[in-house]
Amino acid sequence: MAIPRGTPAAGPAVLQPGETLTVARAVALALAYHPARQAAEASADAARERIGEARAGLLPHVFGVAEYLRGTDNGIGDTAYLPAPGAPRAPTTGRHVNQLTETFDNYLGALSAYQYLFDFGRTRGLVAQRSAEADAARARLQVVRLDLVYEVTKAFYDLVAAREIVRVFEQAVAQRTEHLHEAEVKARAGLRPDIDTFTAGAELARSKLRLTDARNAAATAKVALDNAMGLGPGAPDYRQPDDLPRGIVTGTLDGYLGRALQQRPDLQLLEDEARAAGAEIREYRSDYWPTVGAVAGVNTRGQDATPGTNFEGGVVVTWPLFDGYRTDHEVAEARLRQESVRHSIDELRQRIALQVQRSFLDWQASVERIRRAEQTVAASQVELELAAKRYETGLGSIIELTDAQRRFSEDGAQEVGAVAGFSIAKAALDRDTGVGIPAPEPAPSG
Image 1 (tube, rainbow, N blue to C red):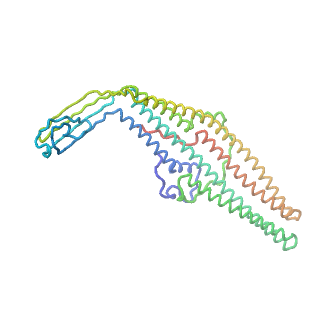
Image 2 (spheres, rainbow, N blue to C red):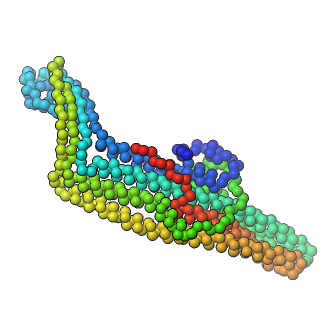
Image 3 (cartoon, helix red, strand yellow):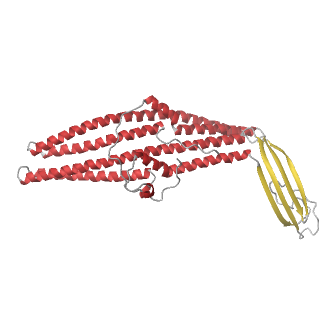
């Protein structure tokens, strides 16, 4: 599927108000409209065009020139025409008539061609270098896409979790409102001291504050997701699935690590840069040897109505015999640059192993966090129910009840975070493994 260029003029044209947004849809929008992806793709396309620029050196170069000059002809020589490619200036005998003031018409038309024949690797080395650089640019595009997928996935589940936490604290506010009312009734009846009313009221105020913070966090999370999708402030309101996905850990650490070493685009990027450096070495080494090319041309020149035509053709050999050791230094620099990239590849391989192991362990731990969080919420719910019954029967205090309420709300929010963490941890593992994005489009031939 071709990826459209350009940022959408308005959010509704891309995402309809009230639409149910899935994580796959959010990722597709980001890969289509995010400016970072567009910039990376434009850079990759520009790098591909440089291959054509390099290949131009293998093809004939043809020059055409035409001139008309009005000038004197005083016999000094080489004064009748301005220099032009493929049109050598021939001396004239001069007419020697009123040399300072009398002028003549001068005409010139010329066509010349140059064809590269052989240069011991400079031109073809440049083509190979530009090809490797284009591959590196495509790999860099894949890095951007990979990061976008993770950022969007994380922002998506952060928003789902933030909205779920809002519902948790909305429920907490509703419960504390009921308990405040109960405390007020009991206090008016003289069954409870007035401090119960003030304690319940303070706890309700705290819950409302937490609800305000939760709503602000949800609004901020939506802004982050809109930005990650590349839609910006024009994005409309949309819905998301209510339930956070839960699952189990699949695959093995060795399997994920093997895939990462095969598929990580940043590793491929460095390998392409190493190839480019190797091609650059061939370019510089070619300067030790001659360059051979064929030339041909025809030109017609004359004064007034007496033109003359000349043809030329031959082989030109140029050989830089001594350049102040510049070529030696250029070759050494290119070799050291290639060696630096090779060391960077080794360092990245070690870093990939660390990232994959850490992400896999985090993913495993997220499953255990969910299980522990579910157990905690279940226990907190029982604790809250018992505390509520004890308060109703006069056996428990308002402090016991409000503490149970607070723990139940906090545990509920932590459970939401734990469940969201499972999907976020899996997205991090997909990023560190180099999977989870659509297959790269084949680079157009050029």
